[in-house]
Length: 505
Ligand SMILES: NC(=O)c1ccc[n+]([C@@H]2O[C@H](COP(=O)([O-])OP(=O)(O)OC[C@H]3O[C@@H](n4cnc5c(N)ncnc54)[C@H](OP(=O)(O)O)[C@@H]3O)[C@@H](O)[C@H]2O)c1
Image (cartoon, rainbow, N blue to C red; front, side, top):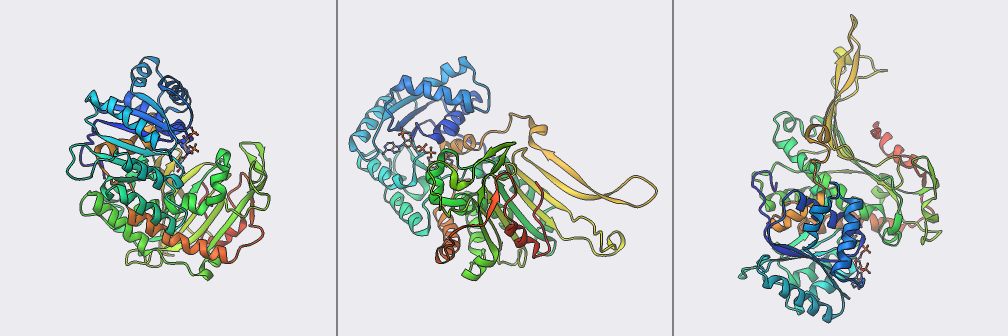
């Protein structure tokens, strides 16, 4: 994986943020850049141009960015460092469909590049709704702003955000539009989960230790659970969410990427194409859903009124700007299988929801129980099986549940936990935000942690089977779960009918 075997060398460049005034820029991108500057990771020649609709000049954009950093930065704001950093920030007011905006961008780039420090390299970060991706790529090409992938001394790269489309067809269309302008090697499709330390650590844990991999198969693993639980409701993104729903918003990208990291075969080299091809193989082995499977093994639901951190909150359909008869799912739980030699018959239970009891993302690998002899003969009180829990957020870390003997003359067995926490071991603020890592990788030209076109399309192909089955059987109401709980009883029944239960997080 990038950075694990070779040092990252971010190249000088100008980062042009389409949507530089938007929510993602404010909460994630600008704070990530500031932290990279604080840690001394940015290349010597580095400039930013915010490119969006709001009327702003450089000075106003700098104060916008300053507020964002003060509110959302991982490391505390520091006035002296800020003064140095803000000189790199520029802003160009734009209308994405207006060629004049791209001419204005060209002039700004000419000005910056004439100084020489950025070496003429350009990274276009499209922090914009996916419906604009094709248009912006086309306009960039028409304005002559994109260097070819081969034969130019400077590079041009483009970063696009998830979700890439809303089904296979729309994803293909966006990918085609991108491919008209950029070579696949210039395209970086972000799933920020892959930038999280713990996610990268999955491969180190699996292949950098000798004790896990021999047990990593259907002979030893009973099942795997992946949970992405959010405490928040839809917040200010109601319009987007109503069209997307939990399956498209979280399962299609974050959860399937986590599943790939857990289930992939050992790569023979830490090469981006090898890793991505191994992940693709997992996606292609996911058992396709029939409409009957969807009915039996996929649960969708919506949150109703309840509590969040002790305060009353409204239900999904009562959220501002949403239809009272909306049937968009805010929760999904499903059971699937990776139909290959290693994972034959091992269920993967996936679940995600908004307004759940707490914010928690975790992968749980439950091993098969010991035989019913010796310490495990009491059928009414079986031993707890070993569980390896990989916590992605919060409190990133890994724990292993093992059975231990309680002190005393009698043999009484108790499950105990061996626990590793990133924060405790490496320092609370030592863990970079995912976006910091990913932006650096793009500057260094390392696509390992980004999704290749075929991966994104394979994921949509599988997700579409569920969406299609849902469309054929559109209910008037979805099952509900109260805000602040762990989901509907239907989801418990899904796993309990297999004799298992969701892990308490
Ligand atoms: N926000 C998140 O936490 C988050 C997380 C993961 C992925 N994403 C993805 O990131 C992308 C951006 O999300 P976001 O939440 O930042 O959206 P947003 O807050 O709505 O921002 C959209 C940006 O695009 C600009 N814009 C829209 N239409 C324009 C036009 N015709 N001409 C020029 N500028 C235009 C807006 O400019 P003005 O505001 O100046 O009008 C704004 O800067 C989306 O694909 C989203 O799915 C977001």
